[in-house]
Amino acid sequence: MTDAHALTLFNSLTRQLEPFQPVHEGEARVYSCGPTVYNYPHIGNMRAYVFADILGRTLSHKGYKLTHVINITDVGHLTDDADAGEDKMEKMAAEKAQSIWDIARHYTEAYWADIAALNIRQPAQWSVATEYVPQMIEFATQIADKHCYEIDSGLYFDVSTVADYGRLARAVTEEGEGRIEAVDGKRNAADFAIWRKTPAGEKRQMEWDSPWGPGAPGWHLECSVMSGKLLGFPFDIHTGGIDHREIHHPNEIAQNQAFCCTNGLDIPANSGARVWMHNNFLVERSGKMSKSSGEFLRLQLLIDKGYHPLAYRMMCLQAHYRSELEFSWDGLGAALTRLKRMIMAAERLAGVEAGSPSHPKLAAMIETFEKAMSDDLNTPVALTALEDVLAAKKVDPAAKRAVVEAMDAVLGLDLFGTSRADLRLRPKSAAISETEIEAALAARKEARAAKDFAASDALRDELAAKGVEVMDGDPLGWEWKLG
Ligand SMILES: Nc1ncnc2c1ncn2[C@@H]1O[C@H](COP(=O)(O)OP(=O)(O)OP(=O)(O)O)[C@@H](O)[C@H]1O
Ligand SMILES: [Zn+2]
Image (cartoon, rainbow, N blue to C red; front, side, top):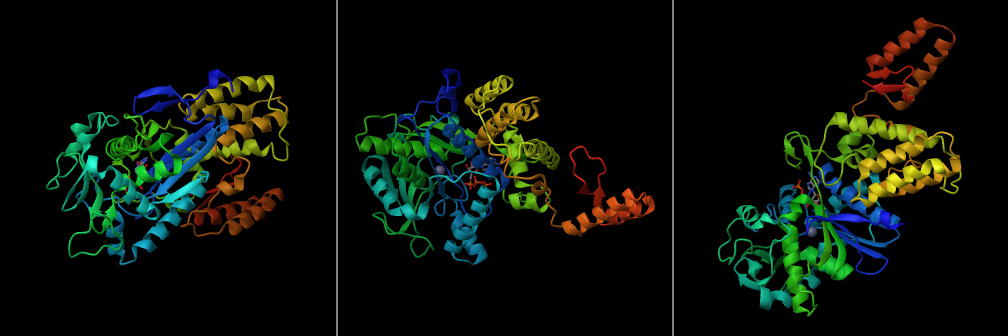
């Protein structure tokens, strides 16, 4: 790696591109806010993890020893970002009349299935919030005297006790506070609960004893504690969706500052992580994607409609992570076609053993790729470099294979692990099986070879009646598609 390829990342704290400088030589420690497992993730949520995965893969590619932690929020996240809503987990458990633990398990597994389907690498650790409650109580106890106060509903963090509260959100005092509902007894509108007491006479499914009475930790506290415990303050990079830049992360930062000051860590402006990175939203034409509006866009819905999950990964990579990305079925179809072309090109390298990647024809493409990824993870440009390598003529296949493997290790499209046939998923609604289609196509081929065009046309019409469109001479070699 030359200096020209030093990694530059956009730090939301400074709103600037900064060269990445690890806290610990040769290492990269990354924490990503994980899902609240009260429902299936939508594909917008999954964009946040495709982004974190690309970041992690790039750090590995640059030679850093990566430690990535993603948490599972199974308690504490309220139905609004303020403190007045209900716990999302408790609410769903009540609606479904199921134990909260079953709900958490079910949706955690569904989330992990999406992680695998999108070829997102496993983090070093999945930290589950309910497994860290004693540590959360300890953290809160340490900062309580100087930074918190108790009211009926819980232990609150006084945001005026830390320097520069809300600097991550910038406009937080106007915009953020407008979204925070009043809670009686709060000193500042932006104060937030770090421990929520169970109201007298009520019993929550998930509650723990604490110095402030039975209750549950606040969502912001969870991430501060798990990131600090597992990665140590300060660690390198904290990631999340752009919504977290406004409330969740400013609140984590405030707690981290309080904790570091209390523990004599001589870094008063310490934010816990040096770099805070945020992916922009996946949106629908109608606005932000959400779990409650209209057709709920889960990865499984895409699969049911016949789109391979890696087409969605491709769709994410086609946009820079800091740009908004609009979802459309046409866009997804185009991403699938692009992926298919790349996989077909990679199939020509099947059986080729990777050799030395140095080849004069490939050097400029490698340069483009490295520069793009080093420039705040510019995946759209990196993708074109990979396509150029795949299309390069008169290049030693061993060199080509080596370069494609190296680039795909960063982009994670699994080009050598996915075949053309894998991409052709049969939509759930289809009335005909793949074997039936293949059998009819084989019969039709024979009829055509025998110049029996009447029979061949009849077979074509039969397939059309079942919703299968035969694609003679399709340049991508897709012999049929569901109409
Ligand atoms: N439309 C979106 N596009 C990209 N990232 C998103 C989107 N919506 C949420 N995220 C991110 O997904 C991650 C998981 O979020 P979480 O499970 O807490 O859901 P959420 O933010 O409550 O979503 P929702 O409001 O839709 O229920 C977070 O990093 C969040 O910022
Ligand atoms: Zn978090």
